[in-house]
Length: 369
Ligand code: F6R
Image (tube, rainbow, N blue to C red; front, side, top):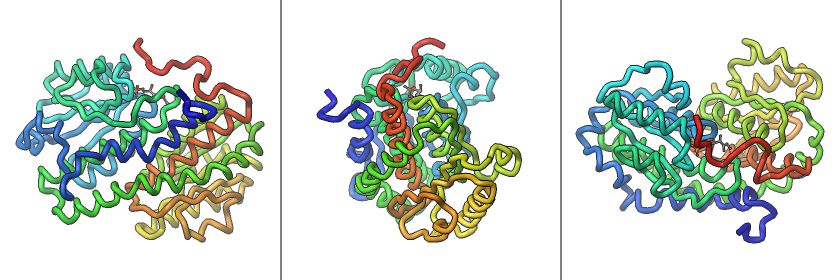
């Protein structure tokens, strides 16, 4: 039931504040993070983990890439992120102090299932992040943290993505507590940031109207580029994936730092480029580097659509459009910055008269390798 929305996707995008709130529920008790599902491993084994490998496909893999920055920062454990199908077929080095974290909304993606089975046989511990109760991947794993995003019907993943990041962040903070890599106060600060996200998501959904106008205006665009740095980089790739899937437009996400190593050659007058701008309040350096990237592409005629936090005026002279997101700590910005990109893909698909919920050639759950 679309509940009065024009599409399941429109409904699911607006359910994102609840998806995050429901995924947090019961996992922060009296200001302490405690993910009950992780007791399956025992604190000792969790402390002994030397390496985390996150595996998934598509949007799930991008959620993993976002979480890599956070988990390494908080828990001090090296985290790699790999596409399930690449991991499975390259003889990866795995030992019993390796934790494999698989991410899958459906819990049925064959590429990810095969990778989990392979890792288990090689002696790794396996944790599944899944949105579907009783699905195959969580059953084949040592432990599962369910995201509580609710059923996702639209083929393009939206609320599952923000719920996956939420679950991975809870995992990272739980790991930091068990390992003693952060103090209780430091963990408390991050938890407060996480608990503030649902309200901020509700507020960012207010950009819908201006995104619709932008999408209508861009409905004959043939190519869109997305740039991001640090945690904004996986957000850029997710924005590009959404646009490919939903609007059948060539789209690519780049790390902003890569521009001068090749992609800047693509910039010609009129080329639309979304840029995810990191907060200047936390890293003036990171912010300045992205603003300088914006100047470089603008000088070559790019049409810049900046996604920037409230009050960041440095982008104003160089951006054609600025879409505002609420203030958040850097590691939490991706959960907010992705929303305008989801909405843009949805509105562009609608503007082109396409089926938002059922894009051509795609299935919700990919159960073949
Ligand atoms: C993107 C999308 C796909 C899935 C991918 C993994 O919008 O829907 O990229 O994210 O096929 O699916 P799950 O999470 O079910 O393993």
